[in-house]
Image (cartoon, rainbow over all chains, first blue to last red; front, top):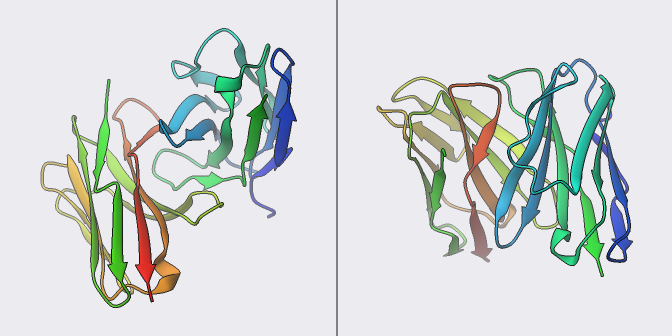
Length: 113
Length: 111
């Protein structure tokens, strides 16, 4: 298995633009997580899905952020409109279940100028 | 809400010295996991502890889970330059599948 695949690896965009981050989890993993990492706030859980259904989105900063998982092999995290304070590394992770380790993707480094 | 605190934030050691990072939760955890993130990389799963008082070893790494399942530690014996990175603990809540990550301890090793 190729692991959790995220795209793009780097994204530089102007304030106000829409940004879409993509994630392909490991086949067979029922859980998918979106995390954001910054120096100030560390690793923050934004949202997670179980069997493609959003379970907890309490970490989504505000309405500008949205996430979808239309099928078991694909998820997106969208920011519209983007702001400079959204600059961070966004990680997607997947796992079989609550008692298994997470496999993280390589992350998307987002810079909003 | 549930919080997982990790100390120290940074640790600088000479190669060959030991290293320990500590993790404390405000609530009882269902399990605790440890991850390592190399500079510029992504977190990589190391181990999971589930039972009260559990101790697990991986070569020079020793992981402990407290009796009350509220704290944990990672100890590295005789550090090597390959140990450089940030070590995260992550506690599982008792309500679902999510993990709450600590802030991490960044380890640097001077050869």
